[in-house]
Amino acid sequence: MRKKPACSWIEVKGEVHAFVSGDKSHPDYDRIHKALEVLLEQMEREGYVPNTEDVLHDVEEEQKRNILCTNSEWLAIAFGIIGTPSGTTLRITKNLRVCVDCHIATKLISKIVGREIIVRDVSRFHHFKDGKCSCGDYW
Image 1 (cartoon, rainbow, N blue to C red):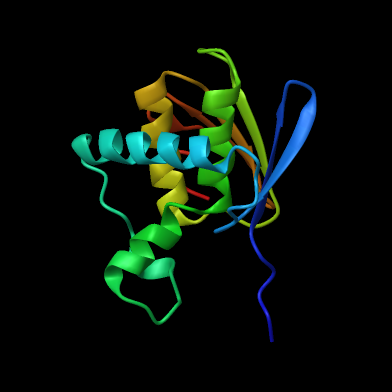
Image 2: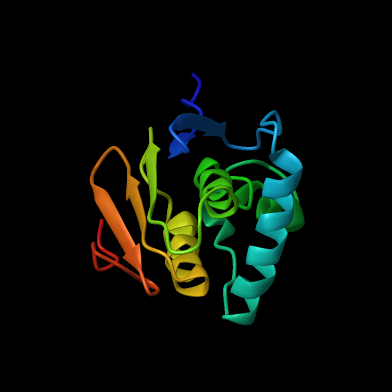
């Protein structure tokens, strides 16, 4: 039995970019990775603590943290941040349900970067703005 891999899409400058969790094949991966490092540092200053309970791999805690930081949503959001002008709303589509950690992280990212982030997962739309989500943390 295999789980369907998480995939997220974002349109930037008229082109759709797809991201799979842990994927390093995007041509701008180095810039995306650097943006994620900066975001993670800012998030940790805001009190972010990774929720590794949903990482089902049998690996060390540090590896679980790294897995979370390369979720498809994180990659798409980071690419959207570096690929669009400041203040642009980011619109992400995801093929699976948003996990708890990504939901918490996206709320913080929306607050830190001052952008609205809309994520469409298989269940609903999540509108993240100023550190809050339209679902009221119930999804």
